Amino acid sequence: MNRIDRKFQELKRKQKPAFIPFITAGYPDLQTTMDLILEFEKKGADIIELGIPFSDPIADGPVIQDSYYKALDKGVKVAQIFDMVLQLRKISDIPIVSMVSYSIVYKSGYQEFVEKACRAGLDGLTIPDLPVEENDEFFELAKKYNFKLICFIAPTTTNERMSAIIQRSQGFLYYISVVGITGVRDALPDDIFQNINKIKQMTSTPICVGFGVSTPEQVKMIGKLADGVIVGSAIIKEVGKYLNTSPGELVKNVSGFVGELAKGVNI
Image (cartoon, rainbow, N blue to C red; front, side):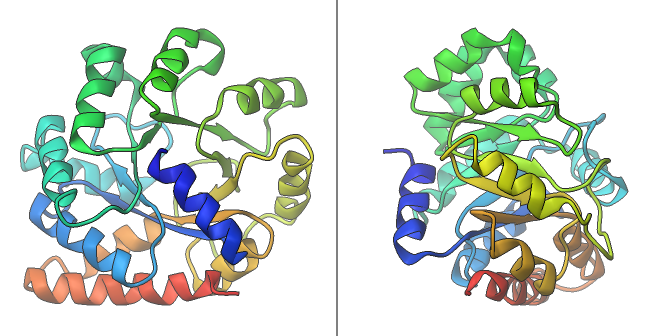
């Protein structure tokens, strides 16, 4: 069984939503990325979303974009990220989903990318610019490898398109809480619960909410209804605060912040 499915089954028994921190691979370097993932797991992370740096991300705001650029400036490559995950798999079984640009997958070819990702120990992908209606071949290939392609639903998604996305999404559905790009928000939209309820009536696939979520209070609020809560920009901002400290200090402080966020799902 895929690690993502196993995790959601475990959490369902515990009646607990998943806490999913996002981190950029290679920011500030790959060894620190691996150390952060291991500490996040100890602090209560259930699944990791691992961003693969790309020069032209379409869904990410300035905070995550900046982390991508800094990682790319240091020469981080997809093959090195896969190697890091492979090393991580010797000591951790936490589910890992990579956020990746469709361009990177397309350039490699579906089969080659999925085979390499599976060999490394990744469990699935979130691809913000993947048009679900045009990639049956990719979705079928992923099923063959028991590799999850997680699809996005936005507040502006029509009912017709929502049905098509629900039919194809594997592992969980990623509900984008805000109209726009990733980034810290002081307040989340009023219609968030109404929209989650609407999707829940259409599918039993777990629904995880991200974009804009940045405080323990917001994690707690969303965790009362959603099956998972994803936090990205707030964590990357925290990494940025400690770039001039030692790697040990950075990991200690950022994982402490993640631990506070993770307490929000213990409801």
